[in-house]
Image 1 (cartoon, one colour):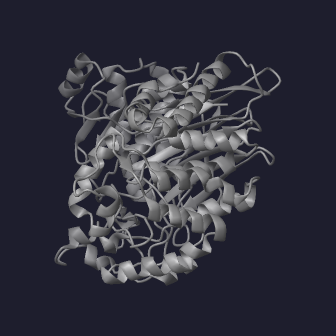
Image 2 (cartoon, one colour; image 1 turned 60 degrees about the vertical axis):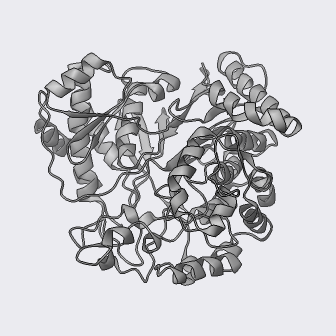
Length: 566
């Protein structure tokens, strides 16, 4: 079985075909053929496998599949997909942003974690982000919230370690779609309209060239971004971190009293870390270790496992209530035990131990919603992207990348086409000095949760989702659907989800039956309807000899992405 999302793809091209037939016929046919081939691959193998991509925009999926078709591996395709998403989802991620990446190296049978969340600028004064400083809340989202962007260094590190194709060839589609434009789809149109009041005259040149924000069906052309990618493709990442682009970023930050400086860019590096592992129901689940906060998902797994004998029915009110109470404990775990390993040791052996999880589980109320007391607060973001890639050799990439808020800080250094992040908006400023405070020169602690699942020492699946603090709640629910309820990846991702939201709301997707929502209210939950995440996943199907025979993947129906293979 495979997942193909035809309606976003159809809508994406329909209007453009009316006035640019030649330009769009070829991509449409390619995507249709690739998607149909993915469906055939899932049911009957008719040709040698090359790989599978699930990403949040069809053009990004196409870019990755083309790299795989040329003989590239999953790590080559990662760069093509990430750079194309920078163009086609400019509000969500890009080289001005940060992220968390999990990979599986088939040659070494090794799961690794590549941290591109960057460091907090050395000149940061976090006191300006808390009372009684005037405008302290505004300081948390604008220029002062820009942290060191490390995504591009991660792309370089990935290529140096694992790349098989020429670096210059991996940006072809990103450059093409930035230079020639692509059609604005409904979600992008809505976000451009929402953000337009913050656009400068320079950024309006791209997003409101006629004086009005671009709307659905218009063409978004980003020639400066195309020029930037050409420079990076031809000269490498030094131009971004040390050369003319770094100078433009430094100037933009000085003009707006931000903390980021060229010295932060020069000293930036992507870092390889060992991931963390939790064995759930006989499967080894891997995710990013600190300085990521992904470990909170393991608290979710560990607590749910304490109730495996109760045989809850998927989607029932009692089951969703249990998940809600577990979510509160998991959320506290994230806030209380997040660390920068350079400053403090991570207490993983303690908080994932059987006695600790059993004691925590014994405190959960299985019949009534409990009132949550926050140790301190942090914001929520839905403005991120996740994608997964698999190749025929068994290599995997599960990557989350973001700008923070929509269009990040809303700052684009002139001449670059690059949106800068507002990463420090996701620090926690009260009480001062808490583990998630903005500490100059130290790691930014991210909440991303890319996952790779191993079965019998072989990759079984990869998945992840955007969604701010909902990430480490959404991802475990997908894992439960896969492993506890034996769902396909398509159904596991599409199934209705819940998420705790501080201080005491329970986000429940509207697809949860009304009778179940009413039962949750009767238990005391403050139910709020909203979609959760935009997940992507791929499952690797093997024969009795352990050989890969097909991929089964899914792009979240909540988004406009595409999952396809060749």
